[in-house]
Amino acid sequence: MRILFSASNGLGLGHLNRLLSLALAIRNAEPKHEILFLTNSEAGPFPEEFPFFTIRIPGKSRAKKSGLTLKSYLQTVRPIFWQTVASFDPHVLVVDTFPEGPEGELRAILEWPIKKIFIFREIDPDRWPEDHFQSLLSPFHKILVPHNPGEVPLPAFFDTDPRVHFIGPVTAPLPVHSREEARSLLGIGDDPTLLVTLGGGGDPDSVLLSEKVSNGLKDRTVSFRIATGPLARIPSTRDFPREMMLSLWPLKPWLPAFDGIIASGGYNTFHEVIESGLPALFIPFQRALDPQKDRIKRTVSQGLAFSAKSSSPHLVMEALDHFLENRSHLFQLLQKTEKRIMNGAGTGASIILDHPINMPKGT
Image 1 (cartoon, rainbow, N blue to C red):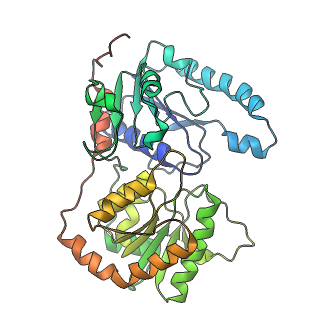
Image 2: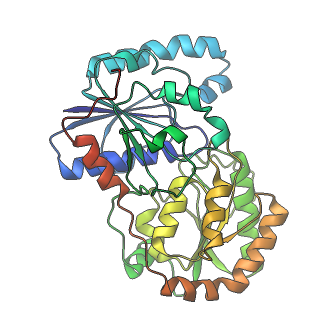
Image 3: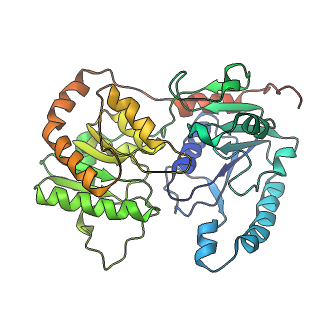
């Protein structure tokens, strides 16, 4: 079977990471299937843990920087996109977050007689007008929700739609290093060490805030490292502690090396941190579709993490001091809390590979 994953991403890696995790779970379960990624994410090269053939079409942000108008960009990339899909001739198409693609590039392909699967990650309810969103999802044969039932707001029609399957949070199905091995490989000594990771790095504000947080930790003589993300572009003129920078993507295998984490609230980072059981200070970034603040608020209300009120540097530094003062208490609480094992990738892979796929009414 040929499976095409369509992954779009701009400032971060969320859609791409989620689909990579599902694809790796499929590869681990049944290596015989052919897998192709088609993406406009500028992240790369792909780490060896995700050995998939990938065709990368530059995104509109790259086109804008190069001086192309949106019209010229779309006229150029849409035929490339369609020709790639036609050449690969997939049996299954898997799409994340944007049913028709962020620029409508999937609209024509959704009419093809192939199996189509949509991944519905939590988005701001104001962004899915009910009737319109239901219409957008009508071509899909299955809708996979990488959350637990009752965990996030969902469109009302999901309650009765037989295509909807809750698979639980998706994190990379990768082996995790032991604490000793991870610290040795990363060159971390015996001192308690924190990790700072504020997303994939495509947002300039995250770089500025990483610098602010890292300088704050330096002033407080706290040992730390920074995971910058593959999209980070840090000018050589910036006063940034490069000796502390680590290229860790995916992050999950390395988390046991650390004693706490200051992290953004993006879907993938958030769930990997929660799964690890590390004491965390989450920082919510404002995103068009991703309600990071709501996601963080639910966990903070359970006493399982701390949070900054926003990504404002002043409020982040206030929250950082509170986190440093109370991290030991949070660690003790987390030690008594049952560790969450997240296997959404494996469950999702099983559903994607299931045959036959029940066709929705009217298709």
